[in-house]
Every structure is written in structure tokens, then in C-alpha cells.
Length: 639
Image 1 (spheres, one colour):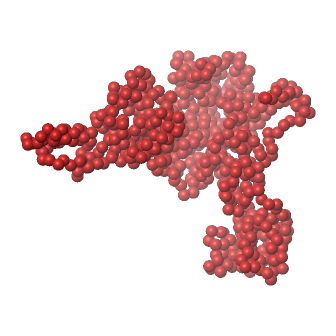
Image 2: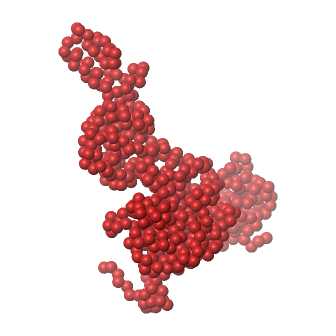
Image 3: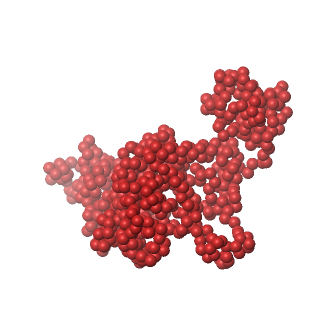
């Protein structure tokens, strides 16, 4: 028999009853049932229940073992009685009666528990990550990650891509974040950079004629951490293809990603239709370039209904600024004052003055304590015997009716809220009709210049969808966002800057760069989004050296600067560069979505904390004086 085990802790079944087995693993927990000891033994594969009674020669050792000790047990496999079968365990039909127990390793008192997985401070979990990784949920997440990565790699091989590795020590590149710099000992005063992405190398591979490249690439960015982006290091499925259009890339990668999502979706569904949404449309409809399409809310402009209206705040804004707009965020089933007030309070907590709203409800027409008759237009007129008091009451009743719509059966649809009172019934009804709303629904409004309020509007749309349960949490909805702006205006620098990837091909090529307003040029750039997260980004590349120089000149970088910073690629493009394009999928985010967590630390082996520190290894750490001398570096630390 093997020194440590004949089976793993997930293998034994009722078919093994009567056999002798040897298992090794960690003591998950020990239970004392009146002198009879039960040990749940755990290894990477699963769990087996071990039983030790006072008559066993192993009983004395069994009494000493504690949680997370590593032990070896020899024993006899026996079937459990029907009432003690555990259907939640693959080994739940058997238990092993221990004849011998060997302690392979003891464990000190644990700084965090493994059994039960209670919430624990993140810094403790990261400092003792080797213990945290023993927890069932995190262990399972990491193994799911491994299978997802393996699936992606296999699928890329199946469709004819070749896996290449690219350098880790490289030159700085403008990818939109800070580089991690590595000082060179051999070249004093010079630095390597850790790659933010293998962008230039993979393009050079296309120039070299390799046609289809992919890599599960480590990437490094010195940026502030957040839940959906780890500090320091992350991984992406990086790929590039030659002689392709944007449509070719979509057709190639859509099946890979959809099939991977379906394989690991569990009880969730995956929408097979992947729409292509222009960037400008996404921003106007959803308030973001990474929309969550599980949320059915679509925003619409309703500016005309407020222009010249009695809602002076919006009316003055529209009158004073030709670029001002009013957007509506429809909220089906949200037609109550309590919900609208709650949303208004949320807006104020976000630093906004509030959130204007209208809501519609069903009401009964109040009765009148006098006789009258109904005119042809539906109003109530007094008969000749009513006095002035009743006449005034009837006038109020008619005014009441003007703000409402008869639904029949004595029910009326009423528009409520300060906005409805100020803009009047005709405008209110026009808004309701445009948005297709009914009694029981609501609508929220944001106003001003769209570029100023668009993020808040998108956040409000997301909030409404979640608060009202409109967002379908049991599916994955993917989309391509296309036609990104090539340039944007940098308000700080007061200059035109690249909006996305500087190596992208502008739509219209050189002609657009020469003859178009730079801020109107679109790029062959695209993102793939899923459930409100960007999971991929890419573009058709600018493979023309002349077009490349002109594109960088518009962004304020001269030919000399381009040759200095991107000399390798600039030279390569002058020796026969094929049209090519590619993208990179965020492996970490894909795994995060598929395992159903909202923090990347729950799917990463050894992540840093919120302060970008590796608490397990004690990094970053101070360099010794000798190391600094070898690198010709002196420290200039802040006070």
C-alpha cells in the first residue's frame, strides 16, 4: 500500500464496503458523540467521515487530534445506516472505521477558522492566505478558475490560434495607466517597464507573419485597487489576427466566450444574441459604455416636454443652454411616493440636489353630495337649483378630472408629484405616452449637459432596476460596444488626447485625420460587456506608418517622439505590415462573473490588499543599501 493513501477523500463509495483503505488529509473537525469520535477528514478532492471507537487501537491518538492537523488513517470501509447517509457528500454512503492513525503534522491555534467559513477581516485572510485557501468556497472558486482558463486555452487551440509568450521586461507604453518600473543595474539611470499589455509585441508577431496569436498573459498596472480590478497584476486572454475585419473578430470570438459562459453558467442562462451597440447609443440609452442588459430600462430624451414649461428649474436650464437636455429614466412598477422619495434620498446621498419624478396611480373619482348632470365632454355641470357653493365644488371636480384619465369602472389614472403639478396634464400625458408607462409606474428625470450628468443617470438606472427587481439576476447578457470616439478633449491639458487605444485604426483612415474635426472621428475600437462589466477590449490596428504618425501628431506627439517611444513598431510597419486586429479578454472578470462574486480577491490565489500590499510575503519591502548602490539609486522619500 502507498505510504500515504490508497484513495483520496472523495473516492470511496458503498462498492468499497469491507475493503481496507488508507487516507491522508486535514482534520476538518472532530465530533465526540458520547465516547465515539467522528473525524471529518478533508483533502483537495473532498471529505470522508472517519469513525473511531474506544476499542480501536487508534482511539488514544484520535483523542489528541485537533482541527487542521494533518493525519494518515488506516481503516475499514463500512456502509452507513440509511438514517445516517449524507446525500450532500460523494462519500456520504460510507464511513471509515479507523484502526491506525499517524499524525503527520500538527497545527497551532488558527488565526482564522477554516470550518464554517465565517466572515473575517480581509487583512487577516490575506496574511494567512494559505489557510484562507483551505476554505471550501474559495478553494472551489480557484479550481473553477483553473477549469475556465483551461477551457479558453483549449478553444483557442481548436480554432487555429498559436500560443506565444512575450517579454515581461519591456519598454514603457501609453496604455492609460502607470507603469511598474524596474531599474536596470547594467544601464544606470534607465528602467524597464512591466507590460500593461503585450500590445506592441503581438502586433509585431503579425508583421512577422504568424497570423493567429494568443496568450494567457500577465499584465501589470500601477493603479488604485477596487473590487473589480486588482492592484498590480492581472491576467487576460490576449489575441491578434491578420487579414481580418472587425466582423471577422466578432465572429471568431463570440462562440468561444458564449460556449465558455454556458459551460460554467450553472443554473443561469446565457443570452446567445450578442447585440452591437454604438458607443453614443449606449451612453444615451444606458448612461454607460458597459451596460447591464439584464436591466430592461432604456432612458430617453424628453427635453421638448419641459421646454417653456412650468417646471422652472428645467425650463430655465433648457432656455439658457442650447446643449442642455432632459433625460427620462422610466421605472415600471415604481409608482409610489415612498419609492420615489427613497430614490430622491439616494440621489442626495450621491451629492445631487435631488431626483425629479412623476408617478402614476389608479384612484377613484371623489363623489359629490348634490345633483348635477354630465356634459358631453365628461365634465360635471350644476343644475339650475345649485347654489354658488356647489358650483365652485363642481369646478374643482372638473379641474381634478383634467389631471386624470378615465380608465373605466370608476377608476382614473392620476399623475402625481411636483413635476406633474408644474408642467400640467398635457405634457405629463405626452411623457407617459412616449415612454409607454401606465398606472403603477414612475419616471425620474435628470437635466443639464449630458456629459455632466450621464454617469449619474446611468447609476440611477442601475439603482432603479435593482430596487424594483427588474434586473434579471439569473442570466448573462453580453454585448459588443462599437464605434468609440478616436479622440477626446482633455480638460486638464486643454488638448486633444486619445480616447482609447492609440494604435487603433481611425474610421476613414488618413482622410478622416486630415479633413475631419478630430473629436468627431470614430475608431474601429470595441469592447465586449457582460452584466455591467467590461470583459474585453480591442480594435482593428493602424498598420500604416503615415497614418500612425498623423494620428499621434493630432494628439500632440511629434514624429520624433513616436519614433523614440514606438520605434520597433514604427520600423516594422515600413516593411510590409498586414491589416490586423485583436482584443484582450479579462480572465479575472470572466471568472468573477461565472462564480458569482463581486470581488476579484475571491477568485485570485494571492491578491494584494486595498493598499496594494502583499501581506503574506511582506511586499513591497525596503531595498538594502547595497541593492540601491548597485542600481545607482538614491531615495527621495516624502516627509
